[in-house]
Figure 1 (cartoon, one colour):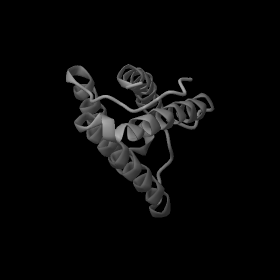
Figure 2 (cartoon, helix red, strand yellow):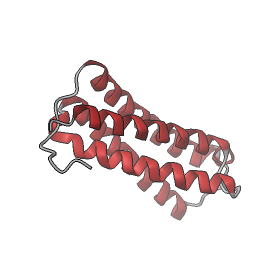
Figure 3 (cartoon, helix red, strand yellow):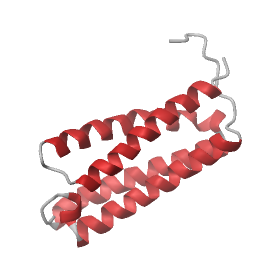
Length: 136
């Protein structure tokens, strides 16, 4: 670990576009989660949810959208908003591990695992992006 970290350089070109794509991915994932939880929970591999359970789905979707905005902000000004991208990488790893555990035990469907695999890929690229843009 580099103890001489002094900041982050701005994202340029492909890195900026990647962060915007990551934001769009999160917005899409949240929309899929909210819609399918209400209309086709079997596609998520879960039982029909009741209103009290849907509250937690909506809260999770809100967090997903919030992180999506963080990635968009990172694309606009990585030097200022890089902590959102770093925290996003950590959380995406957590999502991938958690979804994988639920999938292996038969408590989540393949669509959940597919979205979580996308999160794992984004986490790897976030880490690479942050390392490439570290200023010192």
